[in-house]
Length: 400
View (cartoon, rainbow, N blue to C red):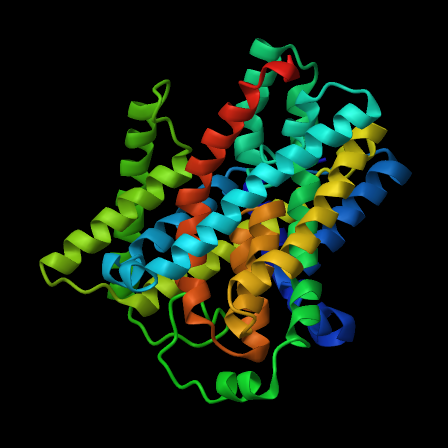
């Protein structure tokens, strides 16, 4: 059963509405700050799985809009990135990037050790490590071809998709419970400080807030997003096959950063409310579409060694967030939000990290520093560091 692009859009919109209602009706979802796209998307994915098993009918949603929505979201991150703001958050950004980089290395170490212990190809440990856990579907698909053609790993593409699917689900589910656990570790003074914050909100901090804007501002924003998409595509094509090759979404974000700061130099101010509106809508639709299109049966097809590696990666992420990220980032509310965000980055993708943060800050209060550094870290710096880490591990002689 093939659902058309318009039918998929209708289903995606209903998934978001379903997710919002589920969070209202089910207390445990609110308690653990599960994002609405995750709640609604997983319900639909499970229903699709049941239809496949019971009625022997495969429901296929059209994916035409999924990539444009993702790229539009990343372009709004770029259009919100001011160099001056990044300088202000520089020390925190460097510390968080160091923690993210440390996790990338640990994910591969854990994956390789378990692969050795189970007597399987240690390269599967890397494939089930930072390639798909922190890299997600895009990085997994790109590197799976290298694993098959240059390292002889059979069915690498299928394994990568299954691992990334597992990560995307767990990244959206784990962030809320981790945040709830860590909220108990911050003092009453910190909670009062959160409630007393009266600063102006940043672009992605309040996805449910009404944004005062105009049709002209929306059109201007869509024009700038279109320039980012077109420019990013050209840049990605130019870099393809070179040592500087980057995913298209990173190039789109990079164009957005340049465009935003060039406009600021000539004193042209973007309507941040319009950017927030388009960015949050794109994020919500992309996440809901991605999650409801998950092929959950592919997880069942993963062999026991891969499932063992993925279970270990989930445990590693939880322990790392609680015992490394939280204390290293200051043991305060911002550290809670950053720890939940890293669950999204380390197991899912940048959009999952943003959704995790939104679910938490919507309930407890703003965290400016988290929304300042996480989008740029996850969407730009982390992919570059991950590529270097993967190449270094693949160069280890005892893995071949």
